[in-house]
Length: 349
Image (cartoon, rainbow, N blue to C red; front, side):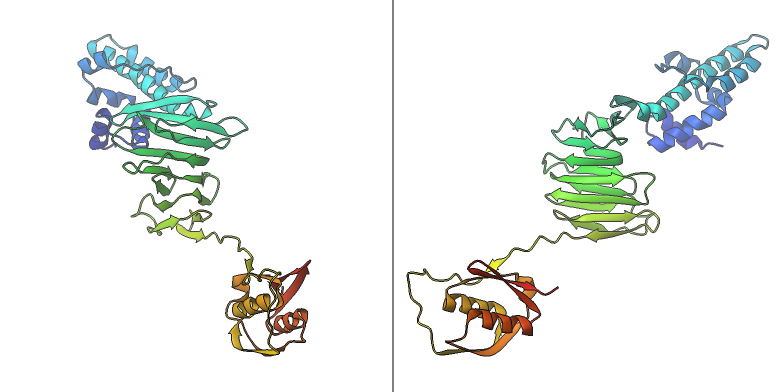
């Protein structure tokens, strides 16, 4: 038996999508229950502008016929009206589900206290651009769709529900965060660019940030194993496993740039070299700086590859730079590459 409280919520237009489906399914299976909740005045005022989906009217018509071909009376007429409206409401329910089959079309699924629930689906084979009222854009992947309430800038905030995959480019608004609900995750931003992938057939939900900063959290912090929050930075990707209900983050590591040792002096200036020079457990970065100046040659290296590496030794005026660098490379598992008049130091593979 359907709870009276839930049905009352339905007639007050306060149901969630899932609750609305439950109520409509209940009345579809129990059409006679309409008489318990609607009086004659309600029937007169009730307006539904939907057609009955083929294939779902037969069972209802059969039930209506059994009750209609009785002795005429007020109760029979009221029940017939109830069954008719039940058919129309069920049609609304099936139209609501079938909206995802309509290519690239905006559809009003229902009207509630938050406004009109709008759906956009991409039934094409290429990405579809959706423009939102706040200036934000959504690039929907084929087969994906979003739902949101209109007017989009109403007091309940900027919230979009996603099924599938989409790239979001969000207009910044510090006073109204933008939230994308995708299955078990809620991604909240002020203004940035990111991709969310939430496909029903996949075990994983993925959120990847391209620009700015976002916060990803569990949509339902009570029912899930992972109920924390993760802040993503450009290049980071959060992967949520729907089976284990746990999340992990792949942090983006920026490609390291070659660093040039202390720049050599202008070659028009001569460098006075000592007869010998001693390095005493000196960091390689300092060694390369000194060699660059001493021999007036450009030396490049990756900081992470020489971190915590040192050199001790004595350099003579007659030693060539190639000899010294080769000694350093052998001791520290490095490789020396000569490119014209410059040297590049790399980690040995």
